[in-house]
Each structure stands twice: as C-alpha cells, then as structure tokens.
Length: 236
Image (cartoon, rainbow, N blue to C red; front, side, top):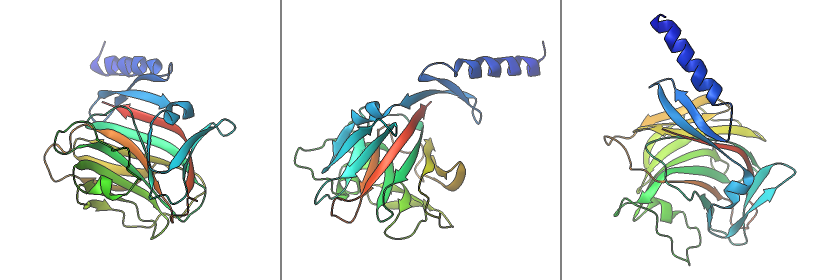
C-alpha cells in the first residue's frame, strides 16, 4: 500500500469516528493534530458561571440559550467551568435581539499572578475593567460592536493591547455564525465561515490555558439580549 493510500485510509477512519457522539476527535489539517470536539447543549451552557446582573435561560423552542442583561447591568459574562489549552477553537451561532450592544468572547482567561483560575468576588457587578485591568489576563475577541462600528478586533489583556483589527466593517445580520480561535500565539475571528481578522501575540508562546467567556454589554437599561446555540469547542 502506498503512502498516499495509507494517508487516505487514516483520514477516512478519523472522519468516520467523528460522526458519533457529542465529544470526539477530528484532525487539524494544518498540523495533522487531532482536536477533541465537544458540542454543548443550551442546558450545558446554563450551568456555566454567570458573572454580573442578568440571566441565562434555556429556550426549548429555539433549542438555544438566551443570555440577557438585568436592570442596571454593567455587563454580563458567562464563563466556562473548565480551562482550555493554547490550541482551542470556539464556534457558535448568535442572534442579537437588538443592534445597540457589544458582544465579545474571551479565550484563555486566567489569573495573571498565579497563572491559575480566576478569582471572582461575590460583590462583582460585571464591570468590564475586571477583564481588562489588574490580575486577569485573556484574549478578547469582539465581533459585534453595535455602539461604535462593525469592525471586529482582537485584543490582549490586561491593558487592552491591540492584536489586530479587521480592515472592513461587517454588515449587521439577524443571525450569524462566529468562530474565534487560537493556535499558540496565532489568533483569529471568522464570521459566517469567512476569515475577517487574524493576528499574532507578540510574546512567544502566548498566554497560558484559561477559561472561555461570552460577554454582553448594552446601554445599561438591562435590554441587551442574545440567543446563542450550536456551541462547539475544539481543543488540541
């Protein structure tokens, strides 16, 4: 059997294995490294830690999670219970229920001092500076900027250090698919399967492993809500 035939058979075996179960493995063809793929249901997401004034409610009819701010909210963040490594991809479908809000994602969120889990006090109200100043480090992926423009961008915290900003504005859509990811220090955002911005952390190796977070911030009246579904996390 030739090397080409062996490679084809291996790919077929790997792909066929990915067709069963909510958690399985698929190959990353850039490095031919297997990625563990986990599909998260709305019920799974509702078990994540909600930071700030708001709610995370399962909508059975839409098969989705409704993430929404509460009265006098300073922003809400839904944080994963587990940390993920330096090769992680998050994809999901989202429907903002109004345009005037900001939707972002954090990857690799951890404590800057201990390099371990985040420490959130009980009186934390969801302020954005918790994620951008002090002891918290992360990569910030902004894909819906209803207050300002629609240029997606990537930043590194603490300090809101710009990594990359898209050259073009992205038209608003009722429902769209988002992918954010990192492979070492390489970072990117895709919207509806189109690569819209990519960049690279200047520091060798990038940030250590950390949590994933969905963040929403509206105009402060508790009106900003989003529908989120088809969430998939791939990790290598």
